[in-house]
Structure formats: structure tokens, C-alpha cells
Length: 325
Image (cartoon, rainbow, N blue to C red; front, side, top):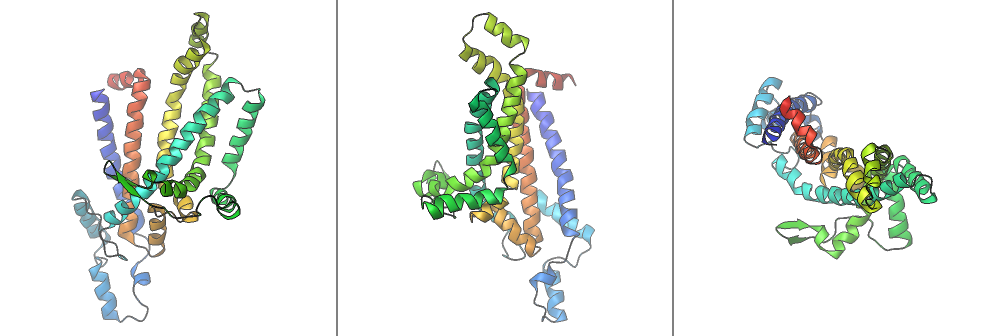
């Protein structure tokens, strides 16, 4: 297991190095933020002074050198717009996005795996068919439209839940979050459901397909032949073996939720990283864009590392083959 983790860590460091280069090249080689940030009526002297203050007068390769030097020190530059460290702006917005993604993932698991298991065990039943039809709607409906319909139904028509905002936060175990307060949950539940609908549908279909594949394998038939209860067969022999692909997809989808929650955050006025990155793109606030993309890349790498470790826990053959390689 130690060799397995060390090898994955070294691979992750290589990916971070490559992605930081690609992120810098993709962002700094496009557009000129001075054209947006400075007044069109500014004099040439004011224009030149602004360019020098932002370090945009240096050749691109020198800007990259400064970027790498600062990156090693954990400095991703200062925002052109807010004049604050870009990484602090990202980290200040990150808790809201993380709690939204975590709750949405929890809902996807709580509803997706049991419903997918039911649909896989009883595919011809009315409930099984209804679950699969519902999952099709979850895949097909646009995310922004779902959000608007949730607001119209629960906020406008029935006045049960607030239409936007994060709500009241509290600190528990050193973590400030809206999940510790009732008002926070009232604000959180609609955006979390909106973000979870597509993921729950994905988990349902993946779980059902895995169950249909595993249920007829020899070890399941042998377990039933030994006289084991159906409950033990399902939860020990079936569920454990279908969790490998489910864990893989859920890990990747958590990263996707964090990176692309921008639509949900915009519809529900959720103060997360998504709204910040959209505003920064409009004004070409390069340090914030680079900091956001770098943080997202690191998050994906950490999530994939955790998924790999969980993969090896559920299936020892993974780490054995890795050591052998």
C-alpha cells in the first residue's frame, strides 16, 4: 500500500507541474486586461504606468518565470480588480462551493445507490421501470431550467424555501458552514437538489447496470446455493463488488460538481467560486483565473488520489498489480 500511495503522489506532482504550465499559457497569452481595467480617456503615461504595475510589460517567458517563482512560494498573484491575493479570494469563496458540492454528492449517493440497486434487482417491476424513466428526466433537463422551476415551485408558489443566498452560517468543530444552522439548510437545500439531480441519475443508471452484470455471476449463485440470506447476498456479495465503478464515477463527479457548479451558483445567487470566476473572466482578471484553475486542478488530483486509494481498499488486485508493475 505504501508503494502504491508514493507512486500515485509522484504522478500527481508531475500532473500539477504540467497543468500549471498549460493554465498559464492558456490564460496569459489571450487578451489584454488593461483594455478593460483602464479608462479609455487615460493618457499614454497612465496607460504605461498601469501596464508596469501589473507586470504586463515583461515578455511572456519572463512573466512565466515570475509565475513559477511565486507558485513555489504559494503566491498566485494579486487580483487586478480587487488588489488582493488571488488565492485568498478563491479560498474565501471555496467553503460555500465545497459545502454545496458535498451536500449534492451526499444526496446523489443516498438516493442514487438504493434506487439503482432496486432497479437492478427488479428491472421488470413498475417501480424499477419508473426509476429508470425518472433517471432519463434527470439526464435530459437543463440544469438552469431545473433551478428556475425549483425556485418557482418552492419559493414563489408555495413560499416554503428562500430563492437564493447562502443563509446564516455557524462555526462547529472549527468549520464555518451553513449546514450547522436551520436557516442555512433552508437556503442550501434547493441548490443542492438542483446540482444533485443529474448526478443521482448517473449513479442510478451506473448502479443498475453493475447490479445486472454482477447478479448472474458464479460467486453470487454459489452464495445463494450455500443458503445465505438474500439480504447478505445483496449487501455483502453484490453491493461490495459494484462499488468500484461507482466510487470511481463519484470521485470524478465530485470534482465536476466543484468545478462546474457555476450555473447553480448563478441561478441561486450562491456566493461560491463559480460566480467569482465568471466575474473575473469578464474583466480578464488573470491572477484570479489562474488561481481558480490551479486550485481546481489540485482538487481533481487529490480526489483522484483518494479514489485510487479507495479502489485498492475495495479491490486488493489493484495494488498488487501496481506493485508488480
